[in-house]
Image 1 (cartoon, rainbow, N blue to C red):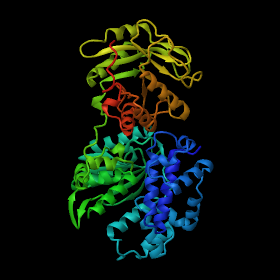
Image 2: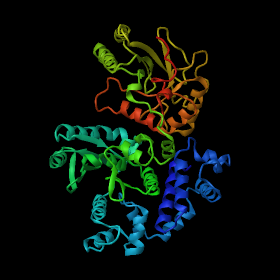
Image 3: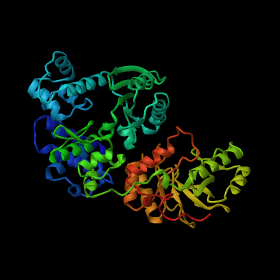
Image 4: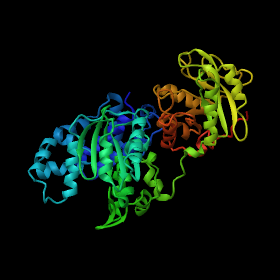
Length: 539
């Protein structure tokens, strides 16, 4: 069955092709429908089965027909017809980074350019020189886009796989290149589940040193392009990384622009035009005068908007909300005052216990929930060695309290051993969905290891959590719910459990990515069990 994301992508493709064909009003209607599809909290197929597609904002009769066709066949005849009307090479230009459909249309209709190869030849021949709208900066941008697309595109990979290498690049630029400020932009900063290329922005009084250090890093396999302010490299794992050195007066504008998403930025630029302004990676301009750009906050303020957290910038409803005033603060690392699902290495002994407790104290946690027995990933029962258990018992002192938790298999019946302070419930191969897993026992603290791969199972566990007042664990990997399901849970009133990663190594992605996923789901501290949700059970 086609997914919501696939439907939204098809409608964005329709909008882009309509732009290329010169349609004035239809493209925005399809983009509005795509944004609504992205924001859905349940599967499109379920809405279609209830014959309620018209209830989706932006879906009228014509779009409803196309959604029904897509659900039935996985294709939209209208989209295929548009693709036949636009030369394939023009569609390839659409995929070049930073070049939109209206620019592709100008190449095609005004200059007779029907593909990237023809575009490169036109640049070399100087055909764009002096053409209105194609100044030196725009031509340089087009050359950079062609250079960046010169090889196969980087495959998207899970954000947790990109996290360690991204941090190593940032550390090198801060410590070895002595950059004043370093930020990762793009889908990485927005906390998307997968990332493609990495975009790094720096301010530096020594730009040449930044490029020298960057290109000499052992992770770098190939230098694809270097200019006065930008370098593009390919890492050993095939990831493309763009490093840009930005003037401090434009850093906020560049960070906003390169963070995206594309849909969010299209709305921002439209809002600017309506206000008689122009916004790009260099700032916000009234005529030729820059009126904002040093910080993201002033960029948004110049457009009459409150600052929007990066994780929400997907072109859904965040712009309308920011027009009304500041958005509710999303959950942050400092809000997480408890860890409710910590596994210890059973071979680590007293040192492992002390290390985790020390890390919890340094972080200022109030409670540390340690799983002392349960079922491992292979379905085998485990129990923390007794010496480690005794060490845990002595760990509660001062503001930190240790909780002993048991992790129960949903298919094994809920039996909470004596001496434990609560339990977590996890699906299993025997019981991937809830039946009556807590008969004769209090409700679980949280449902953990749910995963997002089986949509029916994820929905069933969220329904169960809503019924019994349990939290659901969010985070990266195949055994936690992703931002889409986390948002669905939050809107149902189900609190989220956000792993803190307390005591993990500096490059371990669990804690930071789990937090990013919760923020991407729009979670405030009050939506998170181990932050500002239900008061914790006393040990």
